[in-house]
Length: 130
Image: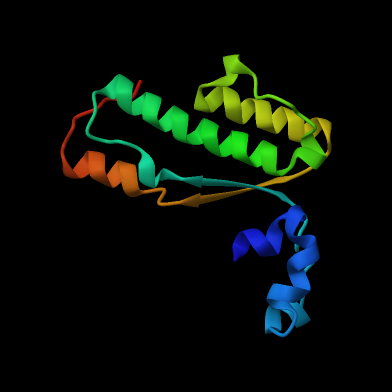
């Protein structure tokens, strides 16, 4: 629901989803104003060694960013995600740079943000992230 409200790609669906609701009758200036980046941490594998866990995290973030760029191809006009950006930090920096070049704002929605951290702590894996 938040994606539909805030994502620029959903502008044409606003009335369909919100028209008869209070939020539809009291639309804010933030509605359909952002490129929404959705990340879900449900698939991060926590029963791994530290390096494999980091790789799982990186993969999850990069896939989310690639999907965001593809679904907003009308804005980003990027044909292929750069192969050298396959780490979470580099992919995020790349997305931010591309958004700044196009003067668009990104809204980040994270689902299950605490899932992998809770799994690591509950199993007392003892990872020291450096």
